[in-house]
Length: 195
Image 1 (cartoon, rainbow, N blue to C red):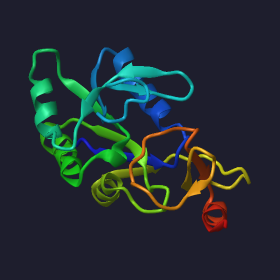
Image 2: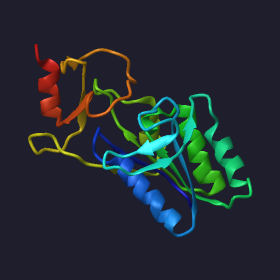
Image 3: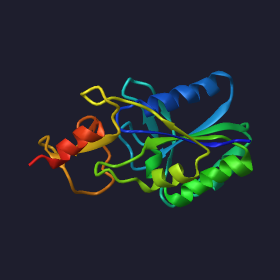
């Protein structure tokens, strides 16, 4: 039975690196994979997944209104060979319906789905996609990174252009090291309480 996996972490834990490495393992054995990324995440270019250590690959950009089960079903029957695995980067940007569509890819099409993403936003709140994945994924995997103090980082702080901590704002604001810093809960709380 195929499964829906969710590997989650805070920023800069290596989620995209793990995704690209796992996809490469399939491809190296001649197996077909499909990689998906949110269309508005164009940090590496439209339809590209990239890691901080330089690995990158093409991906299919998805939008909030896209039917991912339908997409995978069409691709699986397009004559290019059966899909061995579906990989989703930045899975926190999935809608709840899309998470269920990916569950159906695993359950009805028999294709494993490996989703990688953030658990919480800069305010410590779950993203809708992450909430749905935490609720229905067959297997959850925490990818760990560390705070400057050496403890496990589980939270992220968003910084403005001057390096000041932001406490309010839109949940989605795509960025990298210039905008986000990962902390343990204690140091996240310290930063959020700064005057």
